Image (cartoon, rainbow, N blue to C red; front, side, top):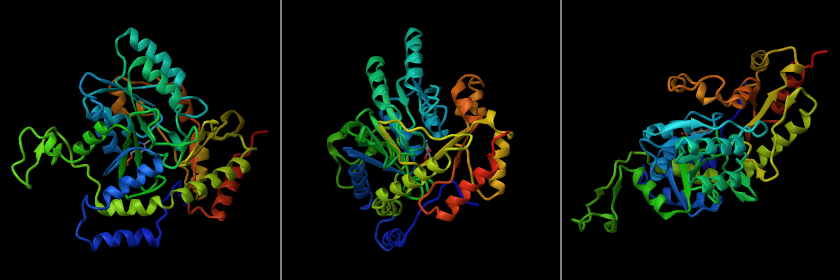
Length: 388
Ligand SMILES: *Cc1c(COP(=O)(O)O)cnc(C)c1O
């Protein structure tokens, strides 16, 4: 089966990890600051806090922004569950903003409508988390404008989007947000096996997230409540976690980031070829806004079901039976049983549900061979013959 996504590990990556294994530090040590610096360089941001997953990064990003009991966080229903769970970890409540029908990202028009209503009801969100689905940035300038008008903070969930651009600038520069979060899970653009990072331009948010990733502990005397007792001394100032990134993971990340441009270029080339070769089929191809330059984590197509004699599931199964590892990103989060138990129900976010009924992701990754690419294209052609 050709998977929908896959990591690309070379000898340099392997040597980097072995180098750490032979060194004195295994857990968070000398590899983490240069990894964070490399992230700052790539994203043109001031601060980066590396952690053990994007889920952890979303959690401490929410905490650093003061999310707690009684607060409300909004995100997109078309995302991985982690974008919503981070609010729940903090004791806050979660709600969703329906997606734009063309980009499948959180829709700024829906956001404006929902904010207007929420203001009347005194239920405005503290934080909004736009998700850059498939690597294409959300419409950040509009969302940022609304954040000024309605006084909320923004965390960009850019798990899919390292190496992507918005308005010609790297995603993660936090021009229109407080914090941006990236994931380094193997299926994402670059990997550290497991890992994540939060970027920000605010020194206070950065310092707060640094403490939260390691038990809420500080060794900085200026932050302590009394003079240091000696070199061994530290103080726990708040309730933090063990979310540290290990040196093994950071070394892999440093090595992988060196090939970021190569990775994104390859993905772009695959996307361009799909867009050219699949243009005649009864499917909707991914729409790109002029202001965005996607990192192409996913290549998502939507079936035009009124033009074919098969159901969504039939097409999906036939592709899998022929070795094309399609997948579906994502099941609308509000339809998960855990969220339905909170009161969400089918019909709440119609654009997201419509998308779910016809979308899937086709293989896109750096090592996808020409033969495999051709196989994807020909099976789609065979399976999606238009009805007469
Ligand atoms: C992968 C992903 C996450 C979680 O990333 P981890 O590093 O696996 O915790 C969060 N949000 C989105 C949109 C993702 O795709």
